[in-house]
Length: 191
Image (cartoon, rainbow, N blue to C red; front, side):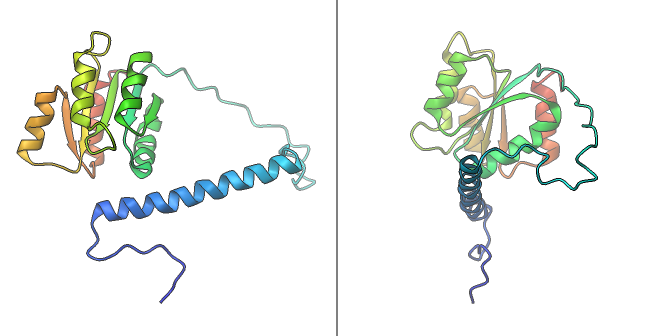
């Protein structure tokens, strides 16, 4: 029966759920960019044109200027869903958060900017997380950066392999909020 809603095959495995969320998220992003391009063709919306007449003369609310971020964080994951999850969890702390979809991009970003912490997925296209971690920890400019591995692999061997590559912590996906917050508090002092 066609319902119009996205479906996940049974048995429900969290990786299949993430894949389905990625598909839905990509479709939503395409729709948003299509709407933005249509609105730019028609002229920018000024925020007052379609207001009710009683609201047109209401003074603007005061603008709160947030303080500058003191900690920089890099999230490296090929899943848009995981990146969105990490964005939502890190947003309350006002970190300067950057995102990368693969290891090569992450290494370039880590060389160009100093990060306090890097959250690194293991299974990615191209270079895997273990190789990326080794390269980050072997470079003199990035060796003091805390690297936290995020992986669906949670066996003792995988954790040992993560420690051997130089990571500072190893979190199994799906990451529990308490465990993530404890890791943030451990490696990001301003939190």
